[in-house]
Length: 448
Image 1: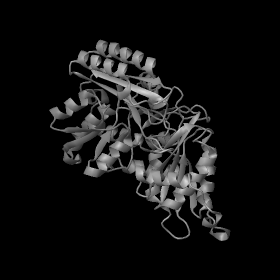
Image 2: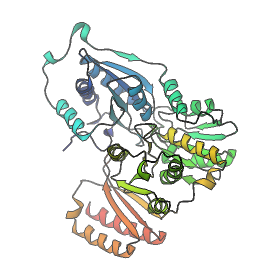
Image 3: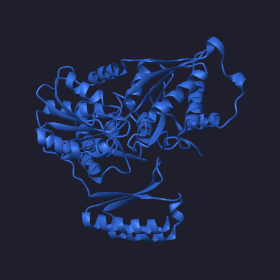
Image 4: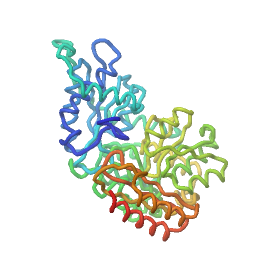
């Protein structure tokens, strides 16, 4: 069992265990020891989001890395996929991202990429934990001129923006497009406005004034209401809402209608099939992918494979079988022929390219997939009990499943990053979905 790592790195309240500078320093040492392939130390890229506490962990990680003879390369605020890109582009040994993604600013997190830009396997995370919790003699650490150092690169944003532009068809540009981009006051606050303006779009930027405490605060992919409002107000062609670390996106069309990750997958799957870029005519989703997506893909002779929740599970399945398109309703979208991890900006660019090719507005392209009513509720819990052992809950589950009559689904799962149990119910009838959600919620609150 892992003690530190959850479903996506390590996460928690900043300056409280496990998100403390002491743990971060040990993790810096562990990543340097594990990934330094060259004698005399390796090179580790470190990026962060805009949380005030990110400074604390940036310096602690770089101290740990340097203490083991490796070099820490500091990029400053940069989206998670930007660090994955730079790690490979700079031929670094590993990458580190300091971010709690969509969590509130009081939290923070640390996640790692290997030298190929992929998140670490469970096996490697366990090896790193073993190092953190072991005692180490000072003789294992270098001294004198062999001690590592930290360097800061100033052009990280520019390098990443150039890479993003390279994923867009060279013969196309966004001249004449009006784009609203909300960067959640997070890691992409410089990237978003620069990217779309350099592609000739008229850019209306919101959520691009971070102050250390306003990341994800009623803005970005978690709260796209401001994006919708601005699209309607300015009569923009598209709204692009990025989350705090830039690895997911929620879009809205020119009418202000939300286009979530499932709709983007449906749209891009058909286009990629036409272009011969959809390996085995398969899309990788998760247990939370809407039933409407599965039906729509099947109608178009395409297949949906479901994994556990989390982009790491999706990427693992994609790597194993060579699939090229996958994602989640929340907006984690992976175009494996373009990037190694979810990238909100790449996903938005792919949709924009499709709009240009088809010469149609997003409202005509993105709403062909049927959507089954789906409701999710997060319940705070005191402890994680095996759900199978809670007799009253199992009784309620059987009753709910009978009520859905085989035309819906119930998904119960513990959050990998917060003390929450998430309930998701999907079915043909919205009223029935809401009724059964409350029924299960009451049972869980009474027993957990």
